[in-house]
Image (tube, rainbow, N blue to C red; front, side):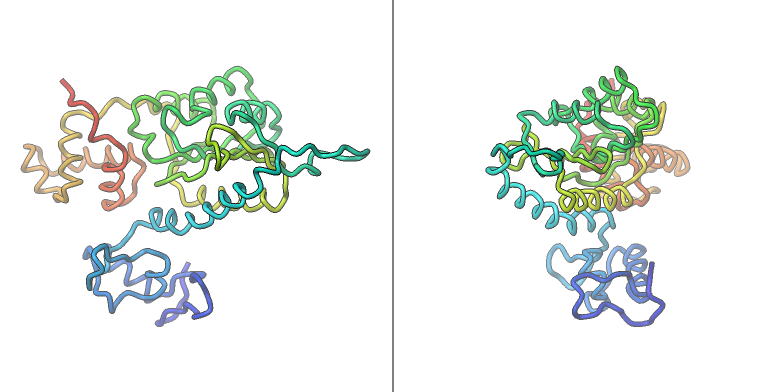
Length: 320
């Protein structure tokens, strides 16, 4: 993971470092413990990777969770793919002449009026693996309910299904039952900070992506170069995502105590102060914090506060 050298090994010609040097790794750990480090102590690796940032352009650099940094780094690549599709889409409906020996690779792209219908057709044709990037929510089609219906009605033995979703699904009471049922059906689910693409990859031979012009329509892609790029995006996001909803995890809504703790966490209070304010022992308070962290799939205090704010859990009605 790191270069065993005292100095930052980031070559000037490189856009991004290939690995963290020892000095930068140690600086990042110090920033996590202290909350910030002076700008002059920040190594170039950390700044270029977005792992240290100064929100107010001041002299203190604050640590950024690796998932958040990765989402920012990946966004230009995702924009480039969308821009490429936007340029090519006007040509996709032009009929291609058929000739003996043609297969579907001669027409690298095809449009569908509905991403939902394209996804249903894709799942029906899958033989080995289905990979899905789903932004979550109740209106993004195909919905989790759609996937659950297809998988339940047409179970596919031996077909691996992987799904990347936003962390927000962990606290979304409307979709969580469907997501839990998908996990029960054997779907591997991971979550990450942001999901910028609606993408479905089938058996590494075709992909479906929402149209950059009309998000409800879909583009079917067979071109090997585009497929390879999309597979690479999926693999990189998957490897950095948090293992998602486990089988049988039908969680109850957050209790009044958990909501109070969540609000104080976001406000920056430490465990001892939270325990005093809500009348709990520190041990009991930490048990509630651990439960919240497990629910939101977080592994650090900084990530937990961020995900509480992003998940919408604080908008949940107060329990009676």
